[in-house]
Length: 254
Length: 289
Ligand SMILES: Nc1ncnc2c1ncn2[C@@H]1O[C@H](COP(=O)(O)OP(=O)(O)OP(=O)(O)O)[C@@H](O)[C@H]1O
Ligand SMILES: [Mg+2]
Image 1 (tube, each protein chain N blue to C red):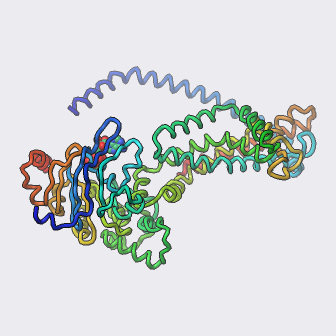
Image 2: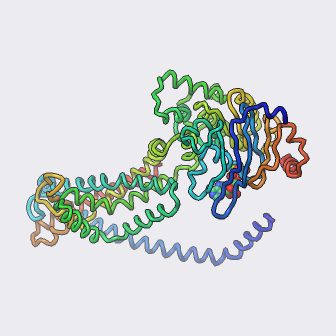
Image 3: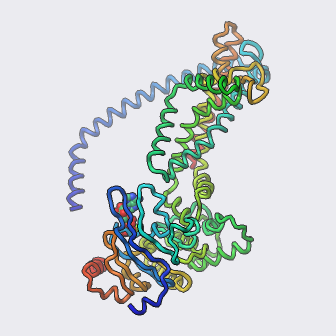
């Protein structure tokens, strides 16, 4: 616990409640996200993990059938006071399913930059795009051919393209929604290395079912169960927890 | 649990298979019969009009204006496309905006529902009623006179629901995650529309436009009361009637001279060729997507 206090909180969630007319999806969530760490969220299917991520970048509120209440502070500011467009550049999200736009690799990565309306010089743009593809460990693999279509890449490559697309905006927080669920072991290994490297520069929020991945990369692990967090702890604390739900979850996951 | 469920389903399927198969055969047979009849009727109309048109067409008809009894039909050909273009101008932007609104689903369902209801009602309003409305409101009350603008708006009212529906469908074909991802990368509504919706729905929109144009080109009723007629070319957007092919068909047939009948048949042929051509292109483009 002591060690935890020293690390800066970048996001603080207090009493977050997300509900539809006939269902409570998140039921009063309290959670801190620590800077330059891998914050992992595990939990059974349907427990509200994706919903939580989508509330952090205010994507959720675009759905009129969903009601969101409670407070989310990003760097001490309530996110409802931050322009969603700006917020989403600071808190990037890599979706559960890789979904490149039907355009070239280059244009996919350039998307987020171009829509900002800032005029970037060609060399500057190229540099940022190459760097992001390198950070996402994809550049070499494509042999510098960035004109090929994003959708013609393999699943694992598409996933890393989507990571590069988020990285190019230099967000402060990067959220991954089950990045390894569709990948083979080799591609999984790459994501593990990648996440480890990323936490030097970014804060990572990782949603996953994969306990192996969690053991390897997680600094803080949180178990969500039916819309509530039932256990929180640093990597080792979590796996040794005596909490009933954690033991159940771990035994089922392994 | 799951296994016993699938088991049940399979049993039900087997039991019903016999009678379902028979019903299917009968239903299929009937639809083929109806389809066959329709094809025969359509083909005979097509051949009849093509034959009557082609045997009386002359170059002079195509390159001179006229009054449906004498002269040619160039004024009507030009006027038809001017009116249709005007109709497109008035109906395309609201159709795109309406489709974006309905598909993006940001509003609570009620407003989308109202939009849907409105377009559905619009589809079923008889064109003569739209024409009458155009006459009272546009031609008289707003003092546009018989004109391109009045005719264009009258056509637009009819084109709008078709356009909006087709555009909406091509928007809906874009994967939802792609739209969300664009927002997650910091795009605002305008950027999502211009960089995701519009480019990806291009082909669908194009075929929708062609379809709407071909429907509009064959309309008479609302134009009679809004575009009027002109023995020559329209001289402006307001207070100047416009000629169009469907008028020549209608008036030429009613006029008791052989030449006016010829003009009517030639107009009908040109209309039919353009409409089938446009629909064929729209289908071809749509399929290639
Ligand atoms: N837009 C929505 N409208 C209604 N219910 C929703 C909506 N989005 C999510 N839900 C419901 O909220 C619950 C949590 O969904 P969520 O996708 O957050 O779960 P998850 O933990 O990410 O699951 P998985 O591990 O399967 O991805 C589910 O029961 C889901 O049906
Ligand atoms: Mg999920």
